[in-house]
Length: 273
Image 1 (cartoon, one colour):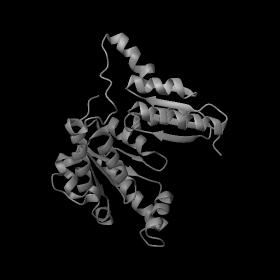
Image 2: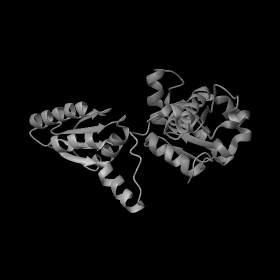
Image 3: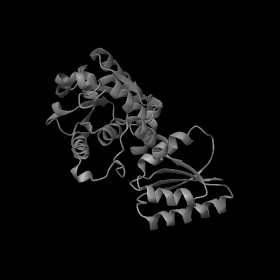
Image 4: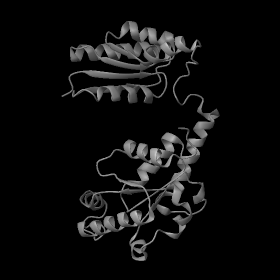
């Protein structure tokens, strides 16, 4: 059972606070109860958060750990003075020293998604998500050349979640295209991909894991059989080697690791390095 509570407090969505906090907490083998307190953007909400944090401390009999990304200094003051926990404030840790070094004040925007309706970056990400959904699993060849990245691999090798992550996180137009038995018989890439080879990146997976995943979808089918999975993976990897396509195994990697590798290998023009 968790024996200490961690709070992620933000006046926005809390995604930054949670990502930062979880990255730090991952360094410790400890079981924690995690509580999200997004949109804490007023004095009243700050006092409500303080009451919740204090109550957790009483129940746990240990000071809570509080990660914050509060841009409003008055709200932060309420949390800092009242929470009676260990406060990890990203603004005082990182933003304030940078203000001093750069000689300018930060804009103290509330969260990554503030005023998103007017944000070109936000609109670009929405367009990328729609594009990736339209070009999921080879559904459409229309405007395929507009792709920043095209993922290929056998069915259920991780192409769709990786495509959507690249679109949501980086605003990349990520298409994905399945390699199917007809491609293996022809010993060549699908015709639609021939002119886009520089944008191709392959995903593969261990046959045993692929069989497990496919059996969840189509139990006891030829599609999910280990024999078929071994054949498809072998043929797909051989095709990628022949075509000089960079690829990696998704078997033990997170989507974040897969996406980072793809970005480092392909370096899409849309991103700055």
